[in-house]
Length: 113
Length: 114
Image (cartoon, rainbow over all chains, first blue to last red; front, top):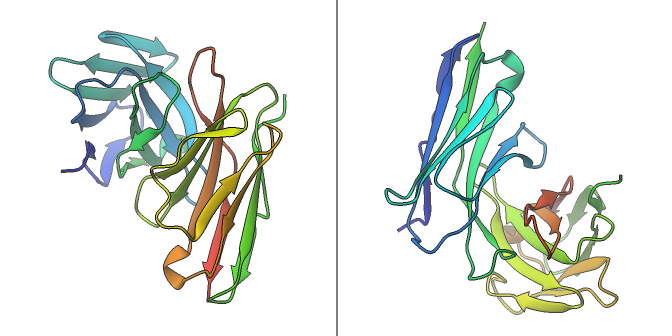
């Protein structure tokens, strides 16, 4: 069983709409959760981190964490064409906070004008 | 400040050859990580350093892969007797050990084994 699951997409969202990206993870002991954005041919760029249940907002991005359901999501409001990328959900995979990260395979997001 | 840097950006080598990939972390980041990414997949963990020592090398696929960080800063990933299946993008990341533990990636080295 994969440890971090994401829908591979592509997810197509009209410009200006809300894009909703979802992720589930298998290790109940995970403490740290991350969303990375990756443009084609580039390396992953950290856009959000979340450590406790609830919502965390940063500009147009909101990360949501529900540890009981082992579920993480990312909402992108007012989607722009520049948001078109692959979004990687990631979960820390060790017993300490500084440890390896387990990545999902990513969801491809396409914002259509 | 400067981010994580990796050299070379691209490396083409023949099957059976030895390669070294270098990573220079963000200044002050004590933790350094190596991952590799194949097309259509998320990065896959290889090894993690705290300072000079490997704290977790559980992701190294076999004994052809080795990494060092002798002075606790720059790290080198070494691959012996390369195989075509080693072709991937090798990513390095660094983080603070005192929190937050967010990992920041370098631009990667694209390794192609012919």
